[in-house]
Length: 319
Image (cartoon, rainbow, N blue to C red; front, top):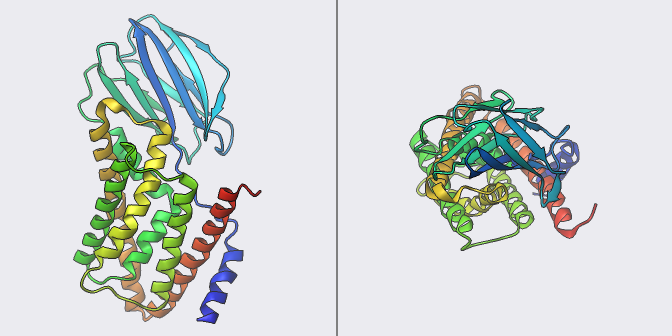
C-alpha cells in the first residue's frame, strides 16, 4: 500500500501542468425594454485564457457600452441598444471566443417570447429566429460541452468503468450518476440546497481519489454498481449547479432548461462509454489489463490529489 501511495504522489508532481478546466461559460442576456430598444449584459469569465471576447451586434443597432465590472467570476459589461427594427431574423456574433469558452445567448422579447442559443469557437455567430422557440435546445449542447470540458468528470467516468463489467451495467451506472446529479442540480438551482463552489470542487477531487484506490485494488461491483455512481453523482450535481447559477439560467424556461442540460450531460457520458469500454476491452485482449489498471489508478490518484490540494489552497485563500 505504501508503494502505491508513493507512486500516486510521484505522479502528482508530474501532473502539475494539467489543470481541470473550470466550466464557466460566457452569457449574453438581452432584454427588450420597449420596441426595438434593448439592454444587454455580457458576462465573460474573468480568468479566461486570452483577451476578452467582444459581442458584435447587427449593423442596424447603435450601442452604448459601459465599462466592464467584475462580479464574482465574471466581467460584466452593460450594453444599451437602439435598433432600427426587431432583433428577430438578425445575426449576433462574438469575436475572440476562447476554444474553452462557450457563450450562451438569452434574448427576452417584449411580447414574452424567449430565445436561447449557444455560440462557440466553431460557431461564433447565431441567427435569432423569427418564430418563437419552443425548447431551449442550447442547454443540451451546453450540457455536452460541460461534460467534455471537465477533466475531473471524465476521469470519474473512466474510473467507474474499471469497477464494473458488462455494457448494460455500464449504462445503468452512468444513468444512475445522471439521475443523482439531476436531483442535486435541481435542488441547488431552486435554492433548496447550497454549498460553496470551492468546497464542492474539493469534494469532487476526493471522489476521484477514492476511485483511484478502488481501481488499484482491482475491485469489481457485480450486483449494484450503480450505488456508488448515484452517491457520488449527488456531489457532482452540486458542481454542475454552480456552473449554471453562475451565468444565470432563464427562469421563464427553468424546468426545460434543466431537463435539456441534464440530457446533454447524459449524452456526453454515454458517448464516453464505448470509447473507454473499447480501450478496456483491448487491454484485456492483449493481456495488458493489469498494466492499464495500474496506469489508470495512478492517473486518477495523481490528478485527484493535485486538484484536492489546489482547491483546498483556494478555499484557504493561499496563493
